[in-house]
Image (tube, rainbow, N blue to C red):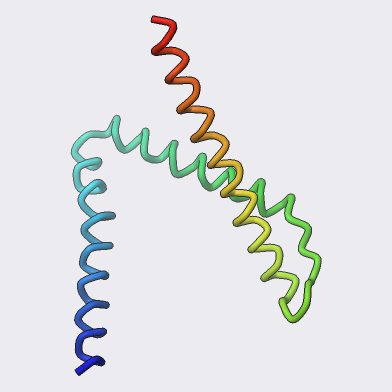
Amino acid sequence: MVDVGLFISYILIGVCVLTAVGMPLVKAFGDPDSLKKMGIGVGALVVVFLVSYLTASGEAMGDASVSATKMVGAGLTTFYILAIAAIGGIVYTEIKKAAE
């Protein structure tokens, strides 16, 4: 019984992911300006990850391989960059609102 529940859950998660990704794409294809903005956003995320990956040390630690430690380092650096950007955006917006 548990296996059937897990199987149904996996199917529902897949449907939700496809819907969450697919609906904005369908809407974006109707508006080329929106598609351009989405492409710029995805490109910026790829650039941030590439910079993070290239700056990651890749020093093997314990049982982990060099590629695994490099990916973990890149993921952490990407997270830090995006978190700082998000916090900076919030602070900038609040300061701009207060100045008006």
